Image 1 (cartoon, one colour):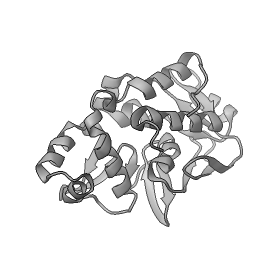
Image 2: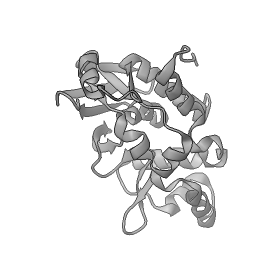
Image 3: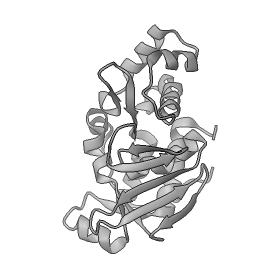
Amino acid sequence: MTAVPAIDGLQEGFQNYLREGHFLADSPELVPLTLALYRRLAGGNPVERTQLAVDLSLSLEQVNALLSELPASTIDADECGKIVAFGGLSLGPANHVFRIDGLELHTWCVFDALFLPQLLGKSATSITNCPTTAARIEIALNPKAVLWSKPADPVMSIVAPDKESCCENLRGAFCNHVNFFADEQAFQAWADGRPEVGHVSLKAAHRLAQQRNFYRYGDQF
């Protein structure tokens, strides 16, 4: 995989977060579990722990032990204990629409929609609204590339949180600050007075999404 070029400031901090600032960096035993969760959720139904046990060829007790290692802020369950959201992919309403296989799912931030098609091996469409102009932004992807976007040149906001903050409150520390904007001018209007926020082009954002997957899952994609 081609590495993302060296970049400065917030962009460098964002890439460092993707490489080192995530819980899987210290817990490689959770990697198969996270892939199984994403793939089950992409089917559009709440995930039962017994299903994960089958997928991973583990006992229910082993699956429960692994699930207990996940930061609480990365996973949501329903009243029956079935998993309804994990790591940015959600069956229930969230900030951004994620269409895949004829299903309407959601993501916690727009960056999720950029890395998920590669993990799932499927094409998808991300639909969101510019926080500044309220303009609809639609991006179509396959597992390897961005196919098209409307408008043509959206930009994505980025932040560089620390690992502890993300483990404690992933959505508050990261997801809620990562959005698509209709253009750079719209981003600048939103980010005025917020030096902790930067931005990248859609092309650069997709490269970073691929890099994110490589850091976590190696070259298996």
